Every structure is written in C-alpha cells, then in structure tokens.
Length: 173
Image (cartoon, rainbow, N blue to C red):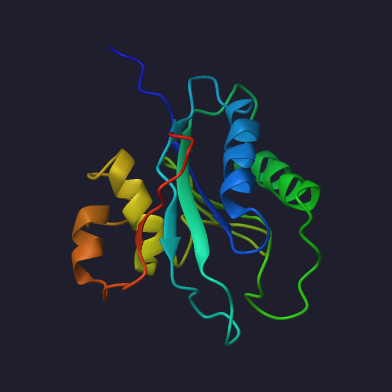
C-alpha cells in the first residue's frame, strides 16, 4: 500500500507594506515546517472582504505542506501566529483591518477542530474566492473534510470578484 501524505492547506494574505515580498517570505518560512517541498500557488490580487471601508486590495496565495512528524494543527497554528507577529502584525483593533500578513490554517486532511483557538476546516474557506482560486490552481479536485463539493464546484457557486487576478511578480512559485 502506498503512503498518502497528509496535506495541510495554509492561506496567506497581505494588504499592508510590500505584500508580495511578505508572502514569499512567509512561504519560505512554511517550507521549513514541511517534510516535502512546499506547493505554492501564484500570488493573486483580490478585493477586501468584510473589511473597513477604504481598505487596500489584498495579495493572496495558498500553500500546501506535508507536516513533519510531531506537528499538530495547534503547533502549526502557533507557528503561523508567530510568523505574523515577526512580519509586523499587531493585535487587532478593528475587525478585518489591514495587516502586513495574515496566515490562516485552512485544512488539515482528516482533522476537524472546533475550539476557541482553532476551527478546522476553516469555517469560511468554502465561500472565499481568494482562498479557493489559488487552491484550485494547485489542486482543483480538493475537498475539505466533511464537504461533498470540490473547490472547483464551490467556485462555480460564488459571485465573481472583479479584482481577482494573478499578480505579475518577478518571483514565480
């Protein structure tokens, strides 16, 4: 029987500072937590969702990693939060305010969580085009734990985002 590695999906976003560089930097940090090469989407520009009026556009991406032995959803979440702080993220003052880096643990194959600190799969991932579109670039048939629809099918049901497009960046995934 072939070993099927666990896939962990992390969404990356930024709308303050040099967003593209911050996301590439964060992906490099994630690479260290993966037992196999990190799968990286392109960078995407998107409309801010549920953000304060006048918020700058976002740069988004998705990474898929295979966790190293001993890694748990909770330990990876703590790591993601420490990377956000290292990138200059401050404690929230306003809900969904602009930020230099936002790292969300979206899914951990076969794992579910519903605690104050962590909900898996991410409760809003299925309705966020800025998460699903980069994920579809990497794995169009992906299904979140407990979901019957693939992300491609979910994308077909979402309203369009006029700003959503692949960034033209000097660095490729």
